[in-house]
Image (cartoon, rainbow, N blue to C red):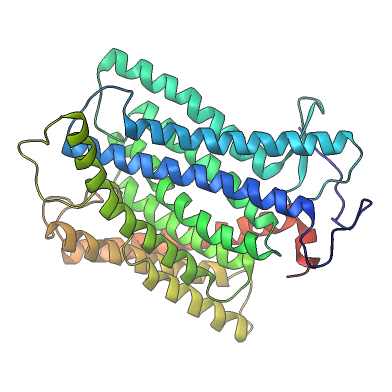
Length: 393
């Protein structure tokens, strides 16, 4: 693959009517939100399927939760493919590529296709998801229908969804000078934040001294929220991302148990005999106090910029503080949801002074690393479509 020279939307072509956004931007917004809609469908299907296994138990591969899950990936993949083909046809017709629509164009397969970077990543994730779906079907045909998240096919599926959402982040970041791009990024990051820590469950069997999911939650929560704030450079971005995450968590908290029971009644299957009144599995693993961490991140970023702190050190300092808040808040969350005993949604044991100190130190370390990488990811996102900074808001 190689980059394709791109020009700004003010290149040759018929001007758009006054008061209306350019046609490439309208198409770009439609494609971007179609990818986001597909990812949301996959998230809803995943939460529903996890709760189904908890409340009802294993069944066949062809269930309604699976249909929603795979349909969402198909929607995202098809939307990305349409945008790639659209960019390819435009390039062949001699029209200039707009890097704010999906990101910088990239030549694929020796120039056969011209793919905006964001849609290339999102489409690859969608295609891999459907491929790993066949692997999941084969896996279950050999070993039965497991009810765990960290089987090899499941981890591969979650990585694929995360890749699709990463493509969505690139797409919306490229259009950050547009309101729809900024809003889309704030909506996309919480979905990615929900999926990415699950992939760390692949390390559960290694006997690591650190709980992998705890590490993944702290790292990605801080990294993605801070990356969004640095990329957009607007006030309240961190708080907005955290607020959307909270709304998403509340919805899944209500929807997943309701959908599992409703579907079980519809198909005539009973709920488990020993079913306990426990929080929804996926929603309970999402950080409940992300608003507190986002408030710390927002305050430190504003304070550091106002006082002229080193731009190279500020992200690490902010990330470290945010990581401590997220790490300690997970102790409170576990205690609230499981009474501090028996391993909470993060798979952790009862609270103690040692646990508090350990989690604070781990949060500090993972948060500082997240801050360091968040600043560099934000630079890459901004360089992917630098022309966006000169467009009208």
